[in-house]
Image (cartoon, rainbow, N blue to C red; front, side, top):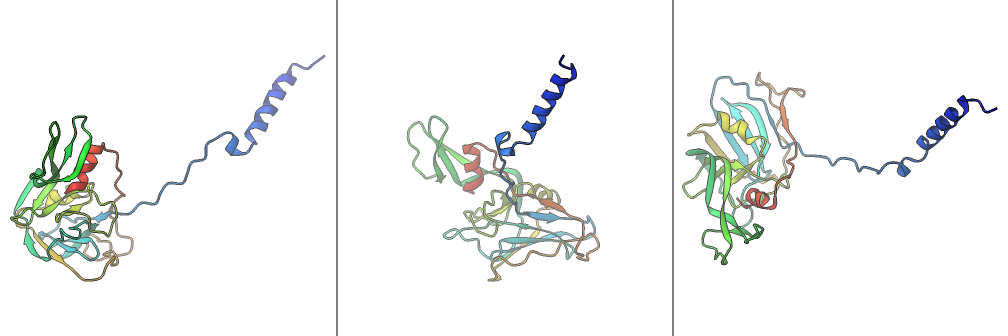
Length: 235
């Protein structure tokens, strides 16, 4: 007579045998996550003094200070070849949460697909197509001819990609915009030292210890539609 426990024991044995099979026969392998860039560090002590910005065109890194104390840094993306950003001493003259560019945009076809991702207001628009001015979030104007700082894509940190404006990481720029004001000084320099070492991590005391606390920004993730991606890349 077969023991009533035997079928249960056999099922348990088979289950254990299946679990011992090579993992590739039961599960799909998942590639390891890609390494991400730290796009910024920010630790505003909210202490005395005003905010100032220094942007190095060579390293594509901005350093942020309050009253002379370093409180953060971020990658930027300035003007690419043919649209280079000019070094100099500037001040923020205008701030807008969203500004539509009067110089650059893109064109979509009747189906809403981008037909020209690098258009200008003077670019001929085919019949049935639509021109869209590029929106620039957290806009901080520096010149009378349309150069400013704003949120934008930085696909390759350390490289200039814009039409002349200074793109700032999207998840960082609201932090700067919150404490910035009209008149904030912005110094743009060119040290000639590409991909320089990152500024030391800031701390509230003004010292720069190795393990000071900070808010770190991760590599930007592109989860937008084609039209939204064009808006991010065109300015």
